[in-house]
Image (cartoon, rainbow, N blue to C red; front, top):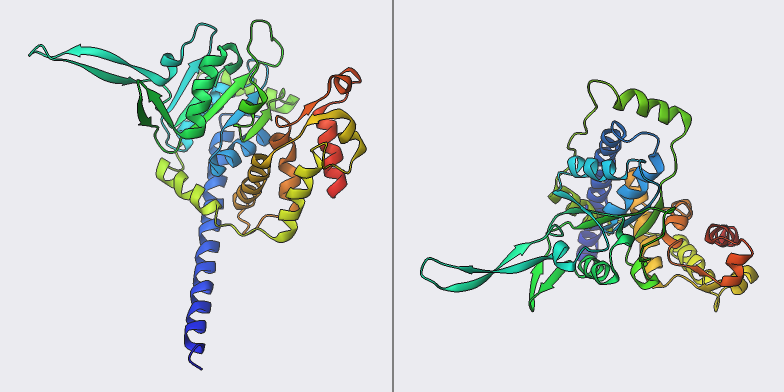
Length: 342
């Protein structure tokens, strides 16, 4: 008898919290629909790229964009900065770029009294949305400096730590064609990116829109839908989206089936050198939650997981030399994983 009242109070609190969560997710879905519409006024024919980038931002991650020049990658970053009210900056990576060019450096100053002291001048990494253009053209030392900042959300200069602003997201690009004179990112560093998004050529209708919209006297402009605090609140909300056991089991089955030591698939055992680690499972879980919230749904489904398998796993798996010689692709292996759990 004495526990009845507390139990009822707890049940009411759970109902109230559930109702608030539903309202918050529906509101977030409406705002993200506005964000999609705003980005779509500027970026044509790249709906999947836009959606996957938005999912990554909601999950608090970083994006690696793979595509030939001229497909709107830089324009996408600029537009995201406007839509989310973020401080966006761009760095063109070159072989002679030094870590200090990104992180910042200390300079010696002398006051009127003759006293000397060091002052830290912040680099472009102190932004909320940083575009690292052609990241594979920089030296491994410079790449590592940026990737460490991505992981720790702070930089160390002269033994002093400096916190980066929040939110902090990096959208790095790579040209898949010209690899001469580049420094490919090591597998351990690729794993720091939440997704690898392949940016393809637009279809005929989208390219027609591009021609008409970008060569006239005026151009459409994106508009702000959310601010930095709103994005941080959305990222916190995503982590409260409930996930069913069937979705969790699917994620575990996919990731473990991609590892040659634990995979039940003969092709994976034969062709894959190493598979995705636990960070891939975490990305699939957060990505599925974010994808559901974008559509205004309270909980993700297995379909949400399967829709994100390719961009989340494709840079977290490596094929053997023999597999590459036979023409096997990572995309083919991921298709086998999806078919195995379907």
